[in-house]
Every structure is written in C-alpha cells, then in structure tokens.
Image 1: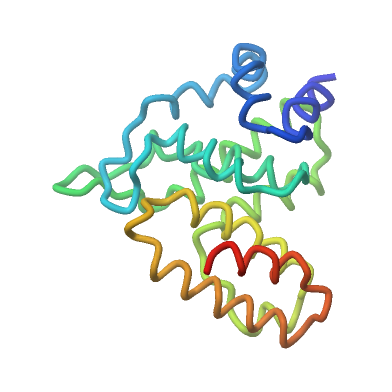
Image 2: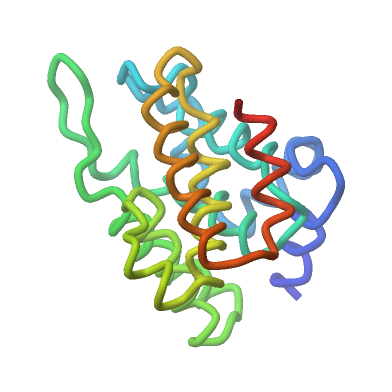
Amino acid sequence: MDKEKLYSFLIVDDVVKSINENLNDLLKLIPELKNMIGFEHKHPHHHLDVWNHTLLALSYSPNDFDIRLVLLLHDIGKPFCYQEGEVRHYKGHANVSANMSFSILERLGFDYEYISKICYLIKMHDTYIRDEEINDDINLSFLRFKIKYCDALAHHPLKLEKRIKYLLYINDKINENDERNEYIKKITRFVI
C-alpha cells in the first residue's frame, strides 16, 4: 500500500504540485526527506536548498516512476555527510543516499532486485558515464543520462556550461550507439 501511495504522488503530470499538495503524507512515508527541507547547499554550483534542488530536478523529469524515485532520493544523504569549509562539500553523498534509500525502499515493501537497481542509479548519479558503459549497456546508460540531465539542470544556472558540454558529449555517444533517441533530441534542443 505504501508503494502505491508513493506511486500516486510521483506519476502525475505535475509532480512538483503533487508533492507539495501531498507533502505531509509523503513525509509520513519517507520521514528522512524532512532533513532536506531548508538544508542549504552553501556551494556556488547550487542556488537552492537540497529540497528545492530536488523538486527542480523532478520538474524536468519525464513521467517515469524509476527516474522520479531516483531523483526524489538522490541527495537524501547530503544533510548527513557534508564537509564544512569556505564552501560546503558533499564527498560520499551518493553512497550515503544509496544506503539510506535501500532502507527506505525495503521499509516501503519494494523487492530486492528493484531496490538494487534504484540504489545503483542513486549511487551513480554524480558519476560520469564512460564510453565503455554506453557500449556495454545502452539502456542503462540512457536511463542514467536522463537522471543526470534532470539533476544537472537543477544546479545554479550560471554554473551549467560544463554540465551542458558533458551532456552533449554523452548525447553524441548514445546517438552513435542507438537510433531511438527522440528523447535526447528533444532535450538537447531545450538545453541549447
């Protein structure tokens, strides 16, 4: 039942509106999300707190449960693994987020194979997609590309140039290996 409730929050046309309208119920399902709300990044590549960065990333996502679930949880570990300094850093946050997500998804009743897939995507959301990975598994690379696209556009608008160049490079590599790239063509036009 918890899985179905989460699904109903995420698989809608306007996911951000749905989350905002159902925030209390969502926080009952995943109370760990509360720590993201109002938690400032204090980093020049981010202009929003962790929660609003997550919502912005979700706003760019296709209506796909796996992608939206990964985006919802991809930075859930940031409030627990930051390094203070002149600029706050988050070394290891992807692993912490993946580990926290494993427990959350297990509690919500998802099966082990599905949890492993989602946690892998969370763990890899900040990792470059290598050419060999595209050649080895085009579908997984395409999924990772979609997640990276949504996350990248939720960063500070003045700091996107390097991320956009990377996305265009990955776009070209995936296009070389796969002709079913209508989604990539569509978002590339938006990015440029």
